[in-house]
Image (cartoon, rainbow, N blue to C red; front, side, top):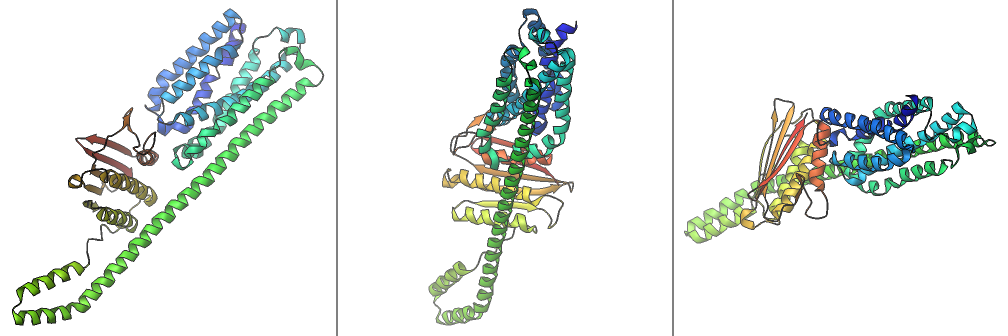
Length: 439
């Protein structure tokens, strides 16, 4: 019985491995974690048991069995997530690289436990104790990585400013997987030659430490870049507020000037009235009306939201797009203004771009925003769109480049991180976005 347990224990590490891979992507799951676990755990357990039996029956190494199994699990892992193949593959390979280093260390522990070259030469798998050691170390890594994976790494995965890094990150874990496979001795008895076993242990530990350090450095760099990107966004919103303030000051000054000149207008109108020149009076009134400043510059009491709405309403006005905003939010409310401004900016940016591709007669942007029960912010944006809508697996695709729409994807990530919800629909030429944010 102990013999058949040896290959089973080697393959069983796919269970903690998949758990570790899912920790940072909880917000990207296509189904609830509980439902996923209901079928994923029995599947992994079944693969471990059946794989162990197959390896034992045919007397083959678990590596030969694991190669196709891991490829299958990587594909399955990607299919259960709403992220790019680059991200899912990089995360999966990152876990495999760590477990490959642990396997090398467990192989050294196995050699110490057996310590008989003739016996070790005939062994296809780790002994039961070494197999248990292998699983315990892998489980320990899951526990150690739990907090950083569910917090810092999760933020990194959700950050679209860091998307291009995933195109090359997978190379790092792949190199370490290759190094660990290269270290596997052709003959197990080689480990007992001179100081080979000691060197093998040291190299295995060093590789594991170096890989962990690489991950830590990568994570710190990513978080730093994320922070810088967020600061740039804050600076952008501050510049919008400054622009909004300048426009407001200009409007106030223009109004003051009009009030100052109104006495002169009365005198001119009185002179024209004495002459009975009605045509001149009409022309004068029309000219004065064109010079009157517009007063539709205030949307709400919250300065950040008002700045965003003011900027995009002015942009829409310049492009000849009717802009209607129904905003009912207080000056101060307990919410992340940055997230709210990001959502609004993405919605209105997309709406303006879509309107520019729509017939003039059908152009419109309607934005509604109000509080519900004091702790939920509801946002709805509507606009017409005449061009072809690209949709894949229920996700709207970008019309500017291949792949998902970055604006919509960014909104989804913000709402998921916030614990809210987002819904996007397109029907009869009208695109509607409904957003719920918790505040």
